[in-house]
Length: 154
Length: 112
Image 1 (cartoon, chains in turn red, cyan):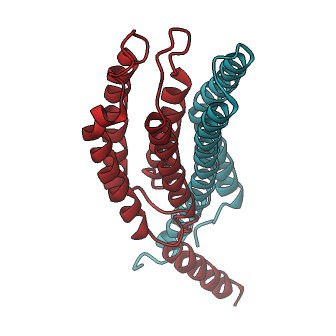
Image 2: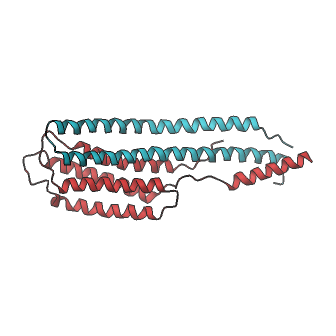
Image 3: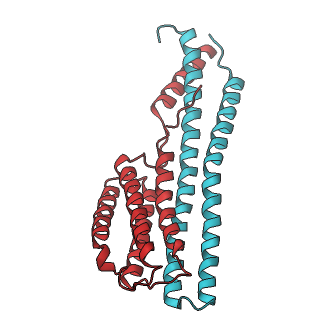
């Protein structure tokens, strides 16, 4: 009788553990990861070009309108990633918030450029580059962590 | 019936937890340290620009705001990695328990 109870307990345990894996957070999203990595490369290329123009003596070469191609592409990428997060499951709150923050970071950067970035030899604006890169890296590093499956190696 | 060794399962689970938590900490630490240092350095850089009269209040506010938004994303990443670790830990231990039960049942009832 005791043996039978133990069998039933083990069978129940097997059924329970085999059918049940916990999920506290959404999974990895390849489209999001790839798009954000592309945005990082595009942004840094843009910043290299822009930083050349804000430390020279020409007050006109850094005008926002001269960089419209980059900003048009950026807007398209922001639409892509924001739409992408709409389709993520209910456990994607952190990822969704990260994408909203990334959108805010790019909008602050764009508004600063729109407002004019006067030539200054003593202000290379590296804080802007660092902050946008940090906002992107944070999304990438979380996506890397989401790739793990949570299985033991036993 | 084969023995279901609770002590062995517990030891395996603890070893797995130690390994999982250790690897996560190693992954997060350099990222967090780098980001926190950079945030502090940039805040100091901006304060100096303001003190030297190079930037006005409006520009300082926008640039600080960008730093804050970026830091919020960094903190969300660290929080998310913590949740992933907890998830991996629970699922990994469930995996260990499942394997131990299967082993005990397979020996006791080979038809399973």
